[in-house]
Image (cartoon, rainbow, N blue to C red; front, side, top):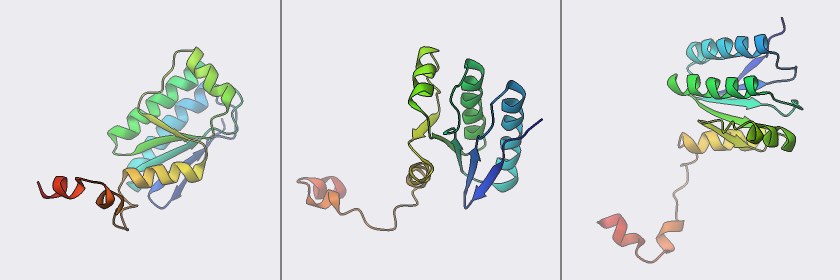
Length: 140
């Protein structure tokens, strides 16, 4: 049985699905990813599905389950590279993928995870200072 590779990039695990997601492969990925989150202590998971042309209800539910497991293990999940046909299929199947955020590509997914973890707070946010009443809110 083929396995989906899981790469560690900083504090993020990148899963790039390049093979057909048969049921056994999806279940194995679920287990492998949970093990890697615990072993590495990573706080973010990006699942790249750009190579998938179709997603059935089982794979859709498995993605939701992976996100739920990741969340329990203190890792946020972002699915990237979803093709329009896959999005349409998921909606038609009634799968809203709770707990999963989406981004157009890996780079945007990494940015999203960084913002969620507060890693983009290197520079002070000056935007609020120009708004009327912002200082009153800050001093209250």
